[in-house]
Length: 233
Picture 1 (cartoon, one colour):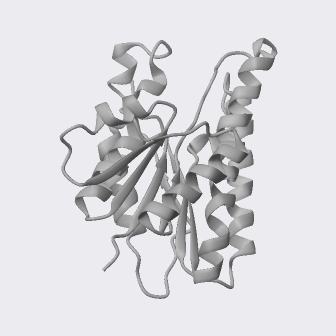
Picture 2 (cartoon, helix red, strand yellow; picture 1 turned 90 degrees about the vertical axis):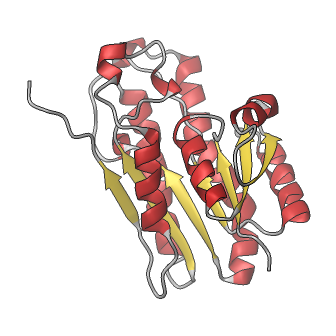
Picture 3 (cartoon, rainbow, N blue to C red; picture 1 turned 180 degrees about the vertical axis):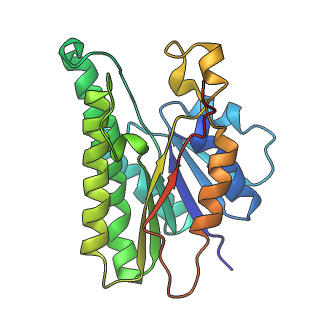
């Protein structure tokens, strides 16, 4: 019997790595996708489970299509795609640079759309599959000093909800994940150690996501919202 094939972008650290480890332990073959194959291999060296590492420039549509074709040839069609790669720059709206804005729109938006386009044809043909977009609570409400990041995440939310409408008459499941801040390398150089102590742990968030996305008969989870719980000062 063919193993379930799970492809995860941005899998070398943080939530992506936590999700990959859980799906590996559940018996899936996990295709780890990221900018550096060496970093992916280093992060999962000795990890229990079935994994393969693949370098991928998430904003290059032709490369994305080529890599996903390679995955299907080697491991079989992707059963679950988790679009997890992301980038963020923060500060007053007027200080947002062109390069920073381009990076957020490319990685967060195109980096979600291109992999989805790569797997959708075979999912439609089989009338089966799951696409999970890791969005963030920045896709739910505006936030001070995060205007460009929030704009990119609202775009991902819109793409997610449009996919759900487009595929409503199929058995393809589309889920949006809206979680608050986690203690991951995403915040390196941005948050102090003290502030990071108040963030959620990616392993905890990953466990909630995996539990909610377990396939159940005649059921689809459209969204999962996970918020930080902070004590009053």
